[in-house]
Image (cartoon, rainbow over the protein chains, first blue to last red):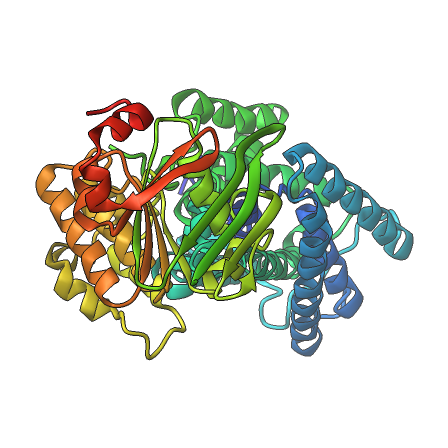
Length: 298
Length: 233
């Protein structure tokens, strides 16, 4: 196989790895914003917090026990952090997006600074669990085993989250709240509980994504902003509050970002935002953003 | 009295829309609320549901004070809303609407199957998304969503808006069925034919107050008052 094709295949696989991870990260951001107009700019800090938890538990010593413990602790920490963020934004419910974004940005900055104080400025790594720390041959190329596992786990997790939102009772409640939360309240449902639950689970997904992504992307200052921007691009491209949009958007951005880095490293971020601009020009509401809301009376 | 509203004042931001509404409604009674555009009929409905903030005054349902409470608290007190413009959720199926509405309410008189018996058209469409329904079907869905909360008071805001006469008759049928089941109904309507067909009494609003209230038959015998209050014959 030619070198170009091999590089292309590696890039496509990398794109899937980051794509599924981005979906897991972006779905919470998208649902909370679509539902309650809360733009949670601390979402990237949650991811980085998860990644640092991974380094604290696992570090450079490959161990399944430590890796799974890191995932469990990150999940619990994510739930708690999401609940806390939901409570913090509640008093600002009737204020503008900007006020809420400002609060969560402040939280993001404080958390990032605390993480730097605790873990230092240097990039840290997380060893992949035993058995996944080597490379394996696939389709004629050698590829890191952990990344392949990440694609698999990410795909399964993304599918589960997507099906829960799209096909279940709980998902119907979430979609209805995104579409018109006042009408949900008139059925006797307290909007704040739905928001807190989605916030908590979305934050859990963000912190666990940080651990899962750890062996590939590591943990370092600035990673929070980098993933937040990618997730925001996914939310805007996919359409606010749409699970399908977040999934398609994440897979597109995963490919665009890795292909851009592989082919034109200097222009990668321009390509990313070029894709964003293209979608905004062609479909300002996002790829799947028009499909919700209440039906205008005919 | 099942519903007692006293001196209710409410509005949006700095503009006051309701200027002291007094209103009583007995259990199982249907009141048709008429009035020109902009007199505050919809604002009254939205204020009663808890969706527009109360400035002052009292809203009591069976003696429980609900002024200033959240809409989910009002809903749990037995009040349901069929809003202007239907406001069904485009990305949910008919089944999902009804499942959410009847969630956690076992033993109520209204069930999903019972609603499908009354509205066979909805039963045929149960797996379709609300965004794909016709206007009439969406209105049926909005009514079904409200009654499945098993309310004791239903607020309807212009349910006939934009619907064909045959569909309006179905809406009238649903209101009559609710009334027969002992549900109190407050109906805001521009369609006098519908309002007269289902209401025990007619009330008229003007400038944020209820200024006239008589039994429906009496209102119909007095075209002069109707002309003066509504600008219609």
